[in-house]
Image 1 (tube, rainbow, N blue to C red):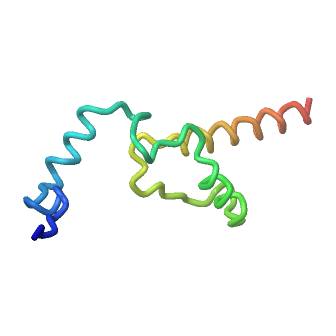
Image 2: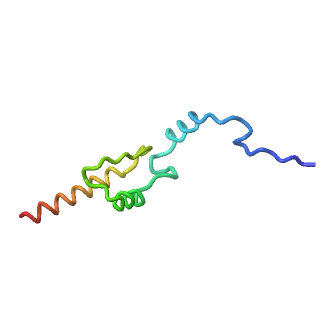
Image 3: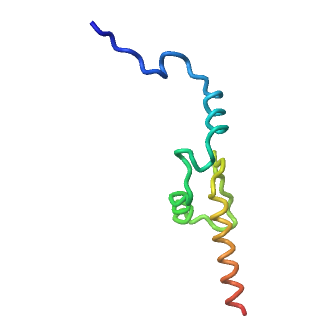
Length: 87
């Protein structure tokens, strides 16, 4: 009679620190499953939240996130538009 085996991850305790160190040391920032070249959902949530330009936004666990780049780019485009209106 065959007895069910535990999945490999259950056969020995996983050291999470070693696991994540290995992931970050061996994969490029854009080669992980959570990477987004454009953080569309976050940008949409920020826009629909009604948060003003002076509001603080915390990108928890952002790592190599491009969210701040997109927010700054949007702010630059707004400033350029305002500047061109006054000219």
